[in-house]
Image (cartoon, rainbow, N blue to C red; front, side, top):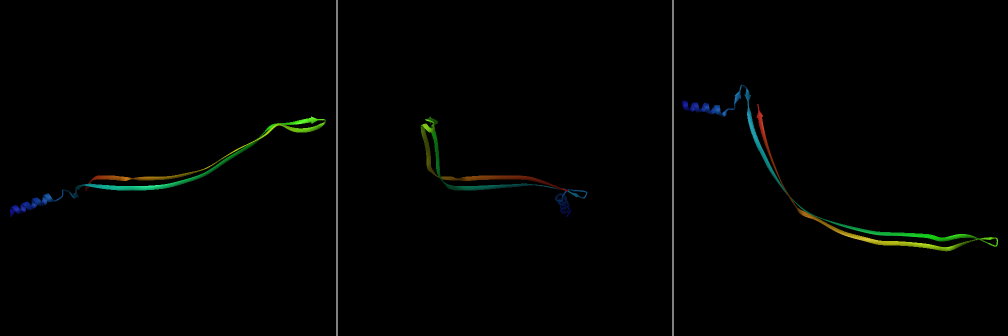
Length: 123
């Protein structure tokens, strides 16, 4: 019986938390870990069309020559010498058509690992 009582007292001492007066000290630590895996598949097709019509024109006219005043028997006359009228023009008409197809495809794989270590000390 004395042996059983002695073992019970020893077991109580070892199982009790350490006491310092009225202070109770508890130390704990914890490790948290997580792993996240993501697989993203992309398949995107874009179609675009562009049509453009254009027109451009220009025109220029100028006169080349001399204007002279003539006196003939007391009469005044006007005349042109080497008189030339120049006229030039140009025109540009056209159209443009474009069709484009763009495709992006593939897979994006990501893995994220996280680990944290925490300690607690309570008095």
